[in-house]
Amino acid sequence: MPHSTLTVGDVEITVLHDSEVALPFIRTFPDVPLESWAPFQERYPDAYTKTADGTDSLRVHFECYLVRSQGRTLLVDTGLGNGTSNPAVVANIGGGIDGVLLTELEAAGFQATDIDTVFLTHLHPDHVGWNVTRNGGEESATFPNARYVAHEADWAAFDTPLDSQIFGYDWWAETVAPLRRMGILDLIDEETELTGELTLTPTPGHTPGSMSMIVNSVGERAFIMGDVFHGPAQVTETDWVFHYDMDPVKAGETRRDMLKRAEEDNAAIAICHHSGFGRVIRDAGKKYWQAL
Ligand SMILES: [Zn+2]
Ligand SMILES: [Zn+2]
Image (cartoon, rainbow, N blue to C red; front, side, top):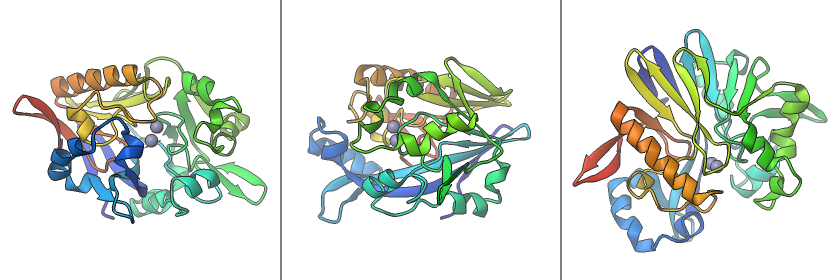
């Protein structure tokens, strides 16, 4: 797939696709009446699809973002992974199909060794899949020259045998716990500047430690927001509850806060599960995602 690159001041952001699945509305947004989706299916045909048996579904991308700023090369999230890096998740969510992040990275002109920082927006199983490469009994960091950065509150939430199986399978032991053993995981607990142009800011609700990357360069802004939004419809319907939001009330507050900021700053916006970049526009008094 062609690489979509956005230039924000002096910063370059490239979408790197890892994987894609269809997830039914009734599973992802069980409280939203099915007919309420119709205007969004019409407005954003690329965001929706049907499963093999014809069930209306979100077209869920698993996207990562390559960010270049002031000589640094950063990766935002590591997708679903493959059958050895994140086996339970690739089997259960990914339909048994390996993600293609590393191929995409190479096609964009970069190697895994070029990444100096991996920013994990949160520690859910579909955002950490390529963290670790497994070769027989050998485990190594997929991005060997990188520090991995995540929020302390997500580590605390998931680093227990019970919570790391909240989806009914274990991913933690394969993808996140090894980073700490290797000494390459930096846990932060407050707004943190990575470069003069890139700041990580807490955007909690979906998980307690969810964070977004704020890009601010030469008067231009972009927000890379992980799972603050699950598709463009939530830009309009901010109180639609995504099934896996751990604190739905807080998640809604965060969505509204970030939309207000994005509108005030005229920021480009990006999320993990919908491809490409958008901007917040108004139409008949309502806010909408407008693709760039
Ligand atoms: Zn998530
Ligand atoms: Zn996710």
